[in-house]
Length: 353
Image (cartoon, rainbow, N blue to C red):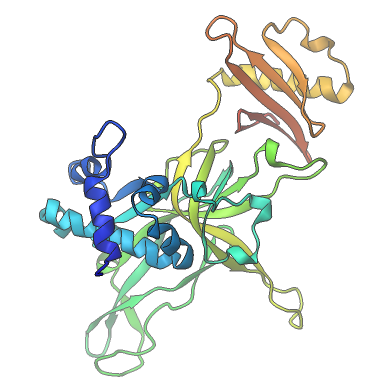
């Protein structure tokens, strides 16, 4: 029996419906050109329910799976709005996946191992830091100074250290037309660039073992995934785990590697209700001082705040809404990370020193 994965994915985009019988993704595809969007977010749970074979492909060939999804989206867009597709670079059109962990591919940050390299996984964490957005060249157009041929040359990069990208390829070694080895001149206006941002996340307090520091990992965001999060946000990330080489202290040592996640999709996780930052900081500081000094007298009079001891020995200070919703809770954690006092509010990081 003939079976084509790309055609099956196209069918999924066109006909998959929610419980009310409404098409989920086809309506979004039709809005992409109107909203000038280049990506579509797909819940992997929906795809797996539609066609279970995609769970196998995603596990065995992550890059091939993402390529199938992207090509399928390009294909349906060419039929739906060919003028829009002709006006943009089709390599920018992508499918972003969320809820990949529902298929058993969720990995806690501290349990990431070599077996996960080049696999598509999902992790969760709190945004610790976001670097400034960098403009990175992916394909350079170089002018040969001898025969004046414009030579496209794809740029290969490696993520060596947080915030650094090494260009391994640079300009072409020689001109493919005149076969001369000569300095080239970059033509920026014809080259292809992307936006890239380095992000660092760490475990949420409930994932940290007793008397241990939070584990962390670096991420790379590209394109329209940039600008969706801020420090302190709690989110899930789906992507391919890649290696970041460490430089050995001595030349006779075996090479060692760290890791980072090349993010394909992300989803912000909202927890709790909003309170004023100044109130959170005030309560957090008093709470920290009270737990350190074992003196809870300063906390008397804070109506609605209840002191609780967490199972790992850390303390939490829980705010219970009485007026709005009696069952609604708003919990913060206060702990010390070396010289910094940190306040975690419902999974959201707020520094108070």
